[in-house]
Image (cartoon, rainbow over all chains, first blue to last red; front, side, top):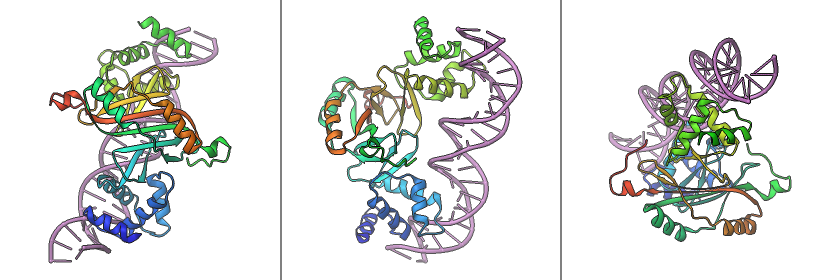
Length: 146
Length: 146
DNA sequence: CTATTTGCAAAGCATTTGCACATTT
DNA sequence: AAATGTGCAAATGCTTTGCAAATAG
């Protein structure tokens, strides 16, 4: 598991430091998108001296390397997630608790056609962000993340 | 034109101040999404003493009233647009010049089905953000907005 | 040994707030 | 006159940067 992360980092010319590996493990385990602060709080339990700027820097490096996805939450903060295809991000965001889940549905083909026809532009990536209520909050069992 | 804006404001219990009307006119004319700074710069030509906080406050009031749409640009800033259906925003964003255009294409029906099936959640609104190159930038004729 | 990475403190910058004054209704 | 809107200055809060010390390969 951590061996894999180390290899992935090496392929991107990033050094496999303990903190970076821990960050990747945290993201890999997370079932929701995490913000820098939450990540910092979680990792500081193990690394007492970890600085918040290091979290930010690592997250952006991982984003640049295409290993991590960054989304804009309606609450105006950034959230991160370990993701596969960086050009194809579909999220379901619960407006009540802040939970973010991936959505499989994609209409990329129609989308590209539409953009070509009407805008004559070129699609490089797309983000579908669906705001709503998750099943937990619909049943009053959601915990507000924010 | 301005009469209509005044009425719309009245319906939302907002006073029709000259600055607010000018802001609405500016948004109504704009063919691209505008940021607070751009809006401030534009309106200050007419209103020398206009404060930036006033622009922010008015934009948010208009968003709250459902008269204006706010989107999160990949450059991490907020952009505003006079818009009809606040639950249905599809944007094409040019990564080169920052231009934002509306996209008509929508797959809401399939989307709702997918969310219901897999996430068991409720869709309240959705945003489809397509990042790419606009026709101007593809031809080297785009002006970087940012 | 060299290039990265990190911690710390300080800076940046878009956005927000407090409050007295001005304007709309 | 009462409620709302505005300017100004200052505060907020997330994010970034500079730089010297630490660490990975």
